[in-house]
Length: 518
Image 1 (cartoon, one colour):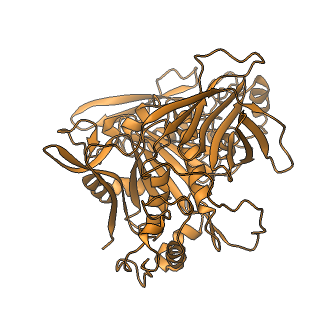
Image 2 (cartoon, rainbow, N blue to C red; image 1 turned 90 degrees about the horizontal axis):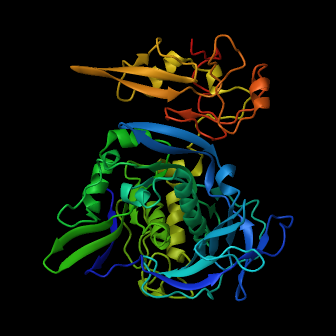
Image 3 (cartoon, one colour; image 1 turned 45 degrees about the vertical axis):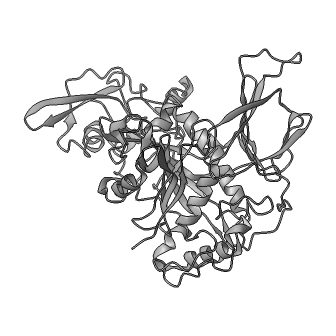
């Protein structure tokens, strides 16, 4: 049996989410990128960040939503979301820097400090946009943590050191996604900033090096998308983490959906609470299984107040639990063979696997945790963390999805999860590059679903150049596509509108035979 771990607070006091505005600033970039891509960002007279480009996603990752209970997936290349992502290791900063119409900076400036655009104020005299610096109390922190503790910033030659990249799939719980109005881009960017900080904490881990990668993000846009979540209807805004994690672990559909992930983490916008009574509650801000990665126990959940990034420390803590680290100061755990335990590391030293604050150690893993993680990586049944699992067989190609699957196959495949007898409505007018699928239901009238055709589908019998391409496509791409040399620019599986991704998930489905809506 696996050991179930949780982080508890008793009482009505919340452990995060408080926001205090500190200052209005007008950030500016001081210089262009150097040869390593590092940029200097002046936030104000007291803070200048040396920003290096960041990597947090697997080469190709999936964003999943649901339509009528069916999973709909879009595939994205990492560079599309990482091009604006930067970090400053010395300051422990992780920010998105966007320079389209004007400079926008959003994210984490350091422990407890955040920055976001503040469009309600006018620009500065030299045209810079206003931003707000604000303070939050991170969940899992008992007190403010100084940013002056030691940290290694020198560049080291790690070419011979193995790098392990455990892959995580985030499930964004309905109430959390609601705060972003279910905007997929905003949610992905938010989680990228968080995982950037997570990986800065793992920089402390050497031989092997460990960097967490996002394999996918599932966004629950309706409460019905998350039947495994047990809401506490007696207490509005609370959910039962114990019942929820048991539901997730026992759900075969979830295991199928997340089969590529080493770890699966629910980002909860609700408060987690195991029980309640007169005048008191037991709030549980995080929940997971020790050493659960690569197994059917690879589930975790963390509270995060949307738009504040206050769950960062808890996410680091829970990922370490999943990779075999106990809290410091404990006996070996019998659920992991030959587990070394953490008795030689005191809980009061205040490392990551402790909730005691110690400025010098708060952002580091204890030697006991490092030993446990190395032991975990050597376990044969946990070897998934050593290899890339989110391999969707997606490759760049001159072909488009319409070269690999036809309209009839599309209806069958997209609706197979819920309506295995679904078929193409051949009488539907498809001149606008849309098609209609009919889904028979036993004892009920059939349902109809209208979809955009996948990219590369021919939409007009009389005009072979009229094919379905993403909204960003140009007239030149349409013309080039007719002779079969256009580069792959995106695709979406079962969504109601075309994606603007950069890769196709159809490369291993069928031999090329071409898509036609006719």
